[in-house]
Image 1 (cartoon, each protein chain N blue to C red):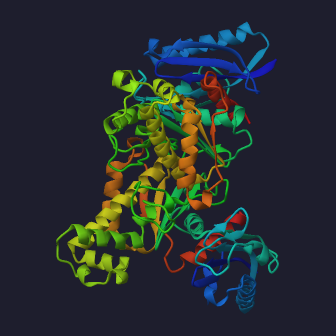
Image 2 (image 1 turned 180 degrees about the vertical axis):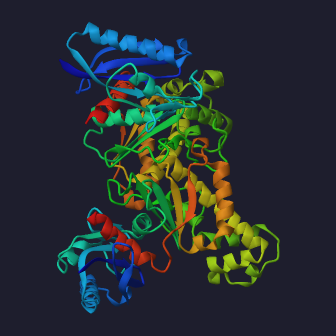
Image 3 (image 1 turned 90 degrees about the vertical axis):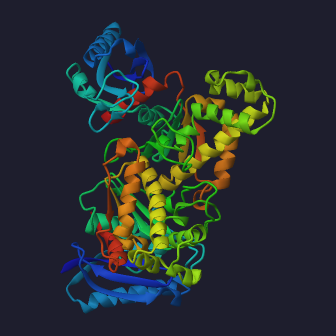
Length: 317
Length: 317
């Protein structure tokens, strides 16, 4: 029998799951629409059936743990709490419900913490004890590892860098406050920055012919790679603010590396080159040259399942 | 024989040291002028003689460890590195030199980390696993405890919140950058804020009759307590920016408490009342009501020796 864990990533729209061995091979996987199950108990039942089916199909597998990544998850309590993008309201005792179905260790954490553990177990941080991963999608998620352990803090919700304030009185944020890191440093922050550049600059640009509601970081990245000035300036500005939050995070925990993951990170060197320049120019002198800034070592397509599976393997250590 | 450790606090001007038992009683103490010993080896010799003398005077004591707090100390390496306020240049292997004199465990850390351990072992954080202490003097030092351990990070220099940037393009800082936390949230930041208020407001104030170079946080605190509008506004503004950095630190590590220590913290409720208000108004909703904001539980007069001694006791655990 080969030992495997199940990695489950619950998103607002889709849930993906897979059976993963200790080396990070995904031996079987599946998915379902989260939105099809407005009742959490039904969701748990369907996930249970699906995972058991995957195990039965591969006759030689033994399930020894389950890791779950979910929005607003509380690792300490095994709950999902007040998640705005899920139908399940209030505080959902997900780990408890899953334990009624599976007699194995079960752990729950948020997406960004799962990504951090994925990076540590299967990705670019295998030998690192101190690093931070930023997931740059619609918002900015963060997973912080210190002394080889994810930081959960007193409440279980530590690592909310996306809502640290980097510009007092700055851009309006969905959280009701202003100047949060993710309003500048995320895929949607980049879109806002393009609109700002269109207001500030007079350069012609194909971005003037796209409805703001249709703009994406992908379009902006492609436009920049063709040399468009507005798009290039927007990426540069984004890199400057992304650097600012990274510099402050370095002052806090002095990591060996910062990993970037998600849509915005895929802009590649168009982002990384100015980012490294701004970090180098503005970092506290005592930390100069001590931090690597790297793309995630886990492939985008498998990261969700691998992160959740890594959580399970990490618990079993 | 009663077991004691020696706590040594090295400051730019003075060095204080004492023998401290496990309960935090200072059984004997002494001091010397750091500036009298521009050669580190002479300094180590004199400290050695002084400590041995204290032990001999009390015949029933056994020295079992030494803890040292010093500016720019590196815990990992036991060194003092490039300290601008000390005569000893370059990288000083202080722990190594001390080990030639004493056959006990010796640890070195910076002042703020020593204060954090002092708070944890002898002060208000005895049962806490996650907290932060801010030392608000000429600058802003910080010691961060996560999962019961001081955060040193990859380099050993983690916890430099005083030089995180909270106002991009803000006040000039001694580090050569702009908008650092300590330029707003420290005793000297408060003095700068009074000058700003004197420029912005038209109120009469006794502070207009004091040379800027003679202004201190003590004078400003006393003036505020008499109801002077400029001083009160300056403390309120300081509280707002102090809150901003605290809120961001909470987003990072979700501590159970924030402790404030040092000159500025002695303004008492004139500072704490607006500080708690600004934190409550601007904290990320997920952390609302989860963090206590407290004055340090270690008395100012003993804190330096007790912090260094706590470091030693903590190593011996």
